[in-house]
Amino acid sequence: PEVTDTICEGIQILIDDNSVQGNEEKKDLEVISSFGRNFLPLLFNCYSDLTKNKKSERAQRVHRLVAAYSRLAPRPLLNALFKQLLKQMLLGMSNADSDNTTAQQLKQKSLETRTLASLSLALIPCLEESSITLL
Image 1 (spheres, rainbow, N blue to C red):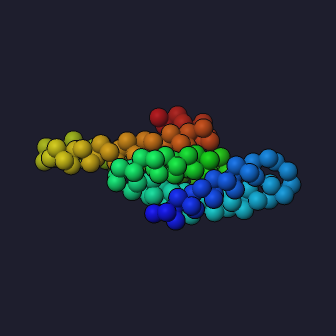
Image 2: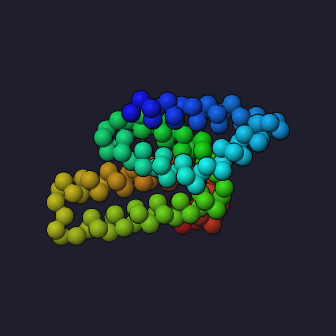
Image 3: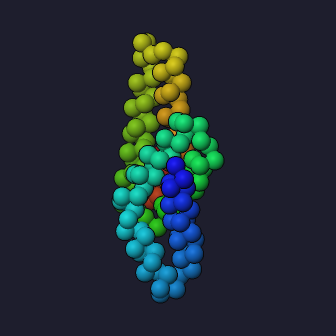
């Protein structure tokens, strides 16, 4: 757990410190950006797990990192991830409508939907207009 916090803090510092667009910093940001395909899904899972386990302070730290990382990630990747999040939200909501759903399952589905919505919100400022119109 502490390792996750340290890694998130380190990546956040790298992004923040290198956001000044000099030549060296731009190269650093390109390298950081190239890992987005791997890091963002991991960060999504980490955020989801922390939210599920009611570790809100740590979850917010990961959420801020998702938002910061999304500023660097390639737009096609962000749009694809956003569409996947929306798809998962819709599937979760449609599954919750079943007559066989217990109160506990409904509560769990609601938490999952809020988590996915929160992750989606972190991406919105960096999405293409075509993805935003899906909302």
